Image (cartoon, rainbow, N blue to C red; front, side, top):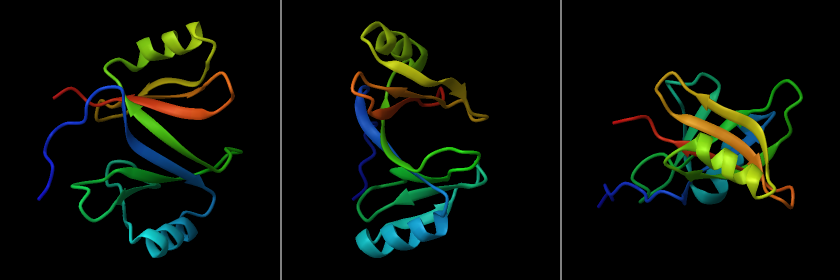
Length: 127
């Protein structure tokens, strides 16, 4: 049975693994956890990760080019990514990547908490 309930705002609903070797990450995580990894048709160079019982993609694998570091991070679904960025700065965090809107309307940003831990926020495209 697939869960069709939309995730609640302010919950962790996505993860991303950044690597200079996406093929190795696909092999490693697929072998370790049985994850299914397929290319994202909307974002060349990005793979979507899903797993049994998940009901759909739950994460992604991104190629780290241009000096970006390898990472594994979580992303929180929020109602307004720009407002969360402002709140994070007010609370002592830092915005690493200000809100970016993808061609399909998804808005995401990458931040640091006060301890230097990287995380992301995103607002889904309007329905």
